[in-house]
Length: 166
Image (cartoon, rainbow, N blue to C red; front, side, top):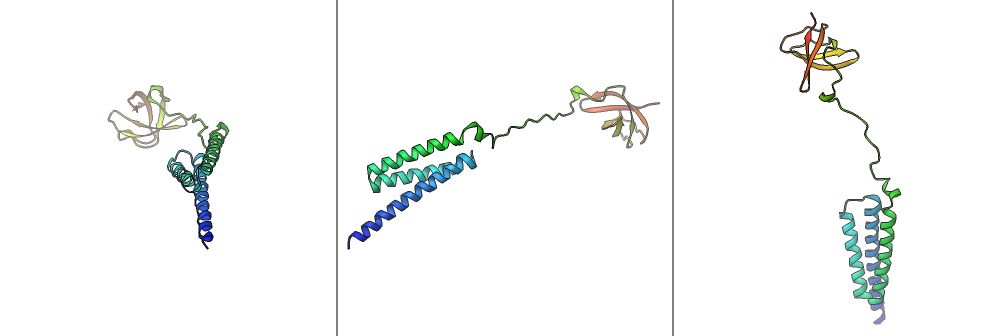
């Protein structure tokens, strides 16, 4: 009569410990392989593993605790080794390079003396077409009608300054 509850408690202990270890290892696998860098999932997994190993020492004895601790350490070591190999990290790492560029005032693409045609009225700022390139320009205060020819007289800060060709 006393054997049944004792055996049931032993099975419950094993089941609790097995579930703690399983979910702890599952969370660590998710942290290392699927969502690296979040640390919350890894900390929860580590806490579940620590609780499972602590319960195994408390409820099942030192020998079983040592075996589960060693097996968990080997599994975690293999997981970290496999998860952090360069081949696996290339799947989640940014490996492309950006070769784009930005127009910079220090390297102006419209040089002083270049002639263009206004696409909009310059009052005193507007749009000018230089060959095939549209650029926002400004005058020194005068108004220029749309369709007029203008010449670049300089580049001040980030603005292209033009005047109407007479």
